[in-house]
Image (tube, rainbow, N blue to C red; front, side, top):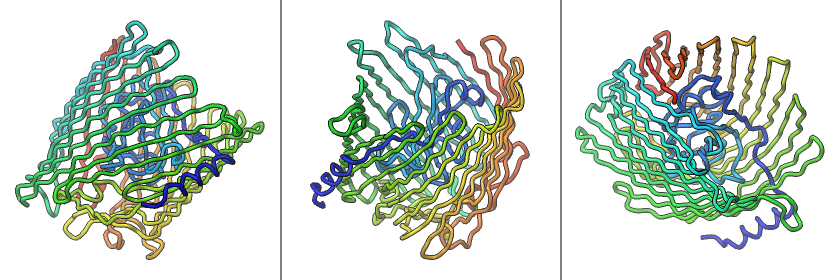
Length: 565
C-alpha cells in the first residue's frame, strides 16, 4: 500500500484553505409535492423526475450506473457498492418527509461511487403524524401486491413498520418473481437533546431468469436475500452513523450445470461535525471507516478496508455562495484516491444558478469482479474508475405558474467500468481507457389552473469511448418525458409519455437497440378513508426491448385499494 501520510497531509493542507456544501443545484421534493405526484411507491416517484431512471434494483442519474449513485434513507444506504444494486422496492411514499436529488456531485461528503450523484430520502419522524395504510392490488400477468404501513408514537418514541409482498408470473417462460420486504424504524430523543434513529430492513427476491430470447434459460433460478440495519445519532453539530448490510445472491441452472453464489457484507461508520472550527470558521469535518467482505464461486473469500477523511466549507457573500470540499480515501485493494469538489452559486427569490467541478472515483463491485451466472460474467482484473465532472445549473420562476430548469454537464472518465453482450448474450465487464459523457437536461413545470399541471423534461446524452470514437452500450442519446396531472374533488388522474431513442447493445456498435415510446396512466378516487385506483403501463401495447433479445411486457394493468387509518 502507498504511504498514507502523504494523502493525509494533502487533505489537511487543502482543507485549511477550502471546504464545501452539497445542496448546490439539488432538487428538493417536499411531502406535499410527493402527494401531488400521485404514486404509491418510491420507485415510481423517482421515475417522475428528469434525468432519473429507477427500478427495484437499479438507479441512474443522467446516464450513470447504479454504482455511481448513492441513495441514503434516513442515513442508511439503499445502494450497495459491493453488488452495484439498489434496494428501492417495497418503500411506500406515504410517510416520506422529503427527497433531495443531487446530480453529478457528492463525492467530497459521501465518498466514492457518487459520480452520478446522491439521493437523500427522509421519512417522517415521531413529531409528525404517521399515515397508516393497508394496500391490496391485483393485475395482469397474475400480479398481486399486498402492503401494510403503520406508525405510532408512544411516550415520544416513534415506531414504524412497513411490510410488502409482490408476486407475478411474468410475461415470458420462467419469468416469475416473488418479493417480500419488511422495514422497521425507531426514533426518539435521548437526554432531551440526542436524536436517535434505528432502522432495519429485510428483503427476499426469488424467481426465474429468462435469458435472451434466442438463447432462453427455462430452468435458471435465482434467490436474493438482503439484510440491512443502521443507527443514526445527532446532537447539535455532531452526527454519527453506524451501518451494516449483508447480501446473498444464489443462482442455479440445471441445463448448464451452473450453481453459483455471491455473498457480501459491509460494516461501516461515519462521524462528522458541523460548526465553528478554530481558524476556519463554520465547516464540516468527518471520518468514514468501512470493512467489506465477499465470498464467491470459484474465487474464494475477499476482505477489503476503506478509510476516509473529509472536510467541507461554504463562504457566503450576500447572494453569492462559494463551496469547496475535499475527501482523502485509502482503499486496501485500490490504494489512495482524492475526491475534490468546488462550486459557486447565485440565488435570488426567483432565480438560482450554480457552477461546480467535482472529482471522484468508483471502485468495481465484487459482483463486477467475481460474480457469474447464466447471463453475466465477472472480470477480476477491473481497475478503479476516475471521473471529473463539470456542471452548470440554472433554474428560474419564469412566471407565477411556470418554472424552468437547465442543467449542462460534462464528464471526463478514465478507466470507465462498462461492458457489453457477447454473441451468446453473456454480459461481460470491461474498462474503457478514456471516455466522455456530456449533455444537457431541460425541465419545465407548468401549473395551468387549480386542476391541471404539466411536467416535461428532455435529456440529451453523448457517452463515447475516446479511443475508438464509438458510443458506450445502453446509453440512448435522447430521452423525453412528460406527465399531465389533474386533481378535482376526490379524483386524481395522470397520464404520461416516455420516449427513449436508439442506442447500441455492444461496445463495437454493431448491434442496435431500437428506441421506443411508452405511455402510462393512473386514475384514483378517494372515498372517506379508502382510495381506489387503476394503473395502466404501456397504454398503447407497444413492443420494445430494454436490452436486445429481452422483450418487455405489452400492456399491463393494476387495480388497487388503499385503506388509510
